[in-house]
Length: 101
Image 1 (tube, helix red, strand yellow):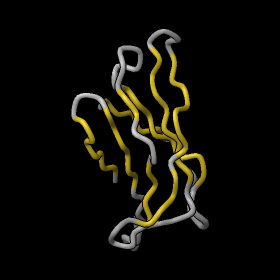
Image 2: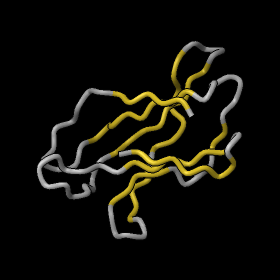
Image 3: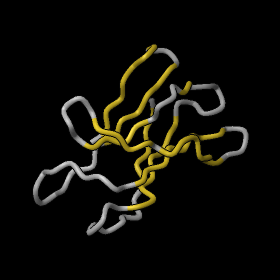
């Protein structure tokens, strides 16, 4: 589950990712996610941030950007979130999630 918080609708972005167990619905800790942004000038995605693991106001594990980031003419608001490490006991999927913000 991914939530986007709008700091300034036109440009500034924050990302939150929640990882839940398919079997139990529990929020999982111990994963590692990377946020990549598109570069139109280089015609490829580049790493922007590693999402930091934290606990939200409801005591659920969350992975999020601590810094705001901007959409630009170069990134065109295109991002990917890639899971680099799965929580203990889980299988790392090789699937990337692409988003336009």
